[in-house]
Length: 335
Ligand code: TRP
Image (cartoon, rainbow, N blue to C red):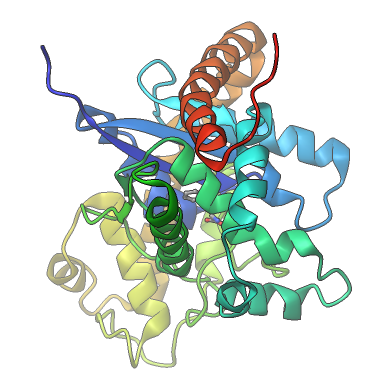
């Protein structure tokens, strides 16, 4: 019998439009993970409503995120790509885990503090218990590893704490997940403020390159990227964060080393370099965009993949949830 693969779980929020940062930092690196792991990737639409969404746009964005996963090369027949809101186990387990999570723990979450500052007019309870829902996502699938960015490590830590606490009371119900430590992608910074991570929700449209941006728009954004007053293309994150970010992006798209890049642009100035980065990124994204456009037209195919994967996610998570309910002493439904 084949050895069972370990389980890997991750996902992205279905808010905004994916950026080059999401692609180089996460999505692109997910594509081959299924060779080693049984992979689950969620369209995290339940987390999205912790911030107000326009219903029409939200529906479209969530579906586009699923389609972008596929367009980027995540094979929906080899990975379970599904919608969080289509699998009610997430909401159910999140409620249960809320009762095993302390307010003191949630008070320490830096993302909650940041988001409450940003959305001061809507500090809702969902924003506060966001990490508990994330714990439910991960624990339902008995994930061994979770690839997440630095900003989500604290949420993974609380997931482990909640799981250990629960297991401490009821025995081994949840697997304790570890952060994925394999190769992770480039950390892409804002093109307008290289001290900040590139974000889907930046108010400045020139700060982020979106996966669906037209090639000319991409080139323009790179031309306008904030750099420094020198002229030398040299990797120095501390003193030249803008140029270093562009070098990271160029290296991630072309596979060239920093040394090669420095040589390639020695004596040529920033203008040439920015043009080259813009061209490289546009070339990288064009095939993805073509595939995205094709897939969007093939509603029947996307629908069939959504259906099959929702069912798989439902099946797997129900097994965990059933066990949890039994352990805590819920009565059984009479059928
Ligand atoms: N909170 C994550 C983010 O914003 C998205 C997410 C939700 C997630 N549930 C998850 C990531 C479970 C990994 C595992 O990036």
